[in-house]
Length: 465
Image 1: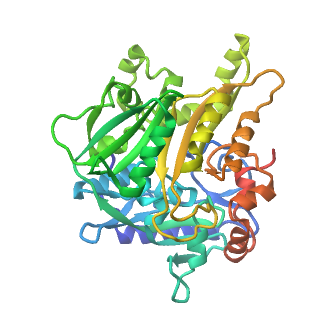
Image 2: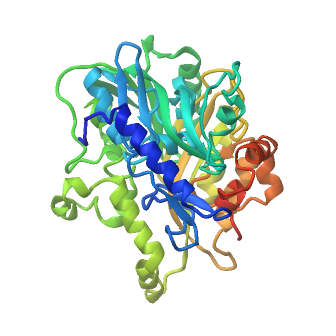
């Protein structure tokens, strides 16, 4: 586990003072961005100092300020990772309502950039459990924003526009979030389906009733290994007895095929996908038994794999080896898309026929309450499924890099879905504004970053292609 001490209010105030001082030191008119070297993004991102952008000092904003076990809330700094947050809440038998699957995702990042996990069919997305947050805007103001905004100065429009703004409206320095109880163990059922439509029927029933076979369900996600083999994982906070360990030689996603039931500690369940970055660690040899035995456990985690990917993106060693072997160039297809439940089977049939990539992750979700989130518009009361796929595909004769991603974008658009914006995107600005609340975004941008010192959302996500 990571650290478990609390930052406290005095240290938080000093960190905010340092942040504001670093903002004040940036010459007027210069672009503003975080002085942050790590990232969970897969789209291009300039290194601090290489693009003329000054970096904001967020070095002291990475902790948990306070836990209220009785009120089931936490005061958390914006750069706090979920790994550290979970380490602070689990001793109280509590967890955030949604814990994104990778340890180094920050709370502020999950709120401004969206996040999802197996509790999302009950609790929606991370920003829906935020009760209040402080935001340093592009104009340099530190504002406390709340969802209702009945009183002057509560900035409800900024609260609503902040999710999916990806740091283009401001940065969260503090968030007050809801917590929920979690038992010391999580008991799982791994249900196999030969027909994806049958799996999705069960998903719909669980989302509607919250139960399966008369049992309350706390967590739900799934994996498609191939068109005729899919698994739905249903879990309950509870259980007793021996627990599985997927931080050693055993690999979690493979267990779905081998075990009808399973039992994990709460900590290991929350990070079950992180050890092997779902299944992506195979690309680095980390699933080869001989390699796995000598690869230290502390380095089998998503942020290590991500650093390897960044090095490859910079130097292209593996790509040169592939060319030397006479193999075709490959296109990176790393995406999470949300489809209405009733269109998900259609998308999966199209995807498996047109994009040669598996496994595929499924994560059901629905909004908690009928509140508008304009920059990622989903319909309240409508069940959705997040479909995640991460890897590369060969670029065939006559094709170009980006063709597969563009085809995915088009299909998702046709089916009334959206995709997360942490990776490659190719939309024209008109379509982008249509899909991601352009009117609300531009209104918030003009009010809270009138000099446009923070990079525009479209420029940040799509850029010049």
